[in-house]
Length: 187
Image (tube, rainbow, N blue to C red; front, side, top):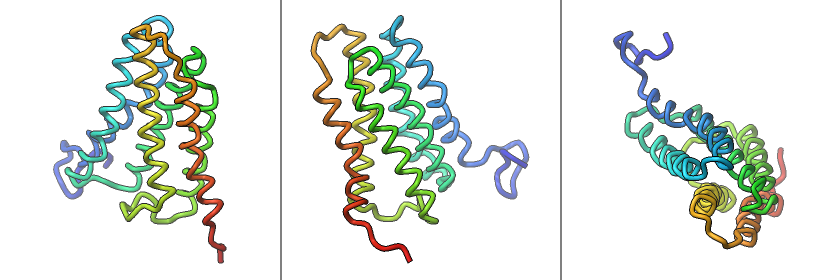
């Protein structure tokens, strides 16, 4: 039965329940961020912090509880995508960030989905290659762009983030270029 621990008490939850709830919260936090940015930028800033915190904690908690899985890793990427694309899109719409950043992040996420679809052991925790490592850095920078952009709106900081957001966009698409350049023939 769903929610039961393997071979255990029907009232107990699986080890991935709490991490999955944390991950799933980003499916709600993303749209809330986008809706609150124009009228309640302080709330959007707090939501960005909460989303970043859930992203930092969910995988670590899942592994500690013995519930880490490729399903959980995939859910994490989708939750990140929902939050980050909503956040970057709202900030680009507000002209805080360059429009190239949410586009680059979306292209990067689509490329990641394609790589995961081709790799049967995706999310297995194995060593990362350069494209995967750079993609991870891009994900961190995307969260940083949402958090900093929301802070700039909330605290009315009169500095443009367009140049920095273009650099983050380049980091987002760099793993794709690396994969094209280091492609091995498929047999």
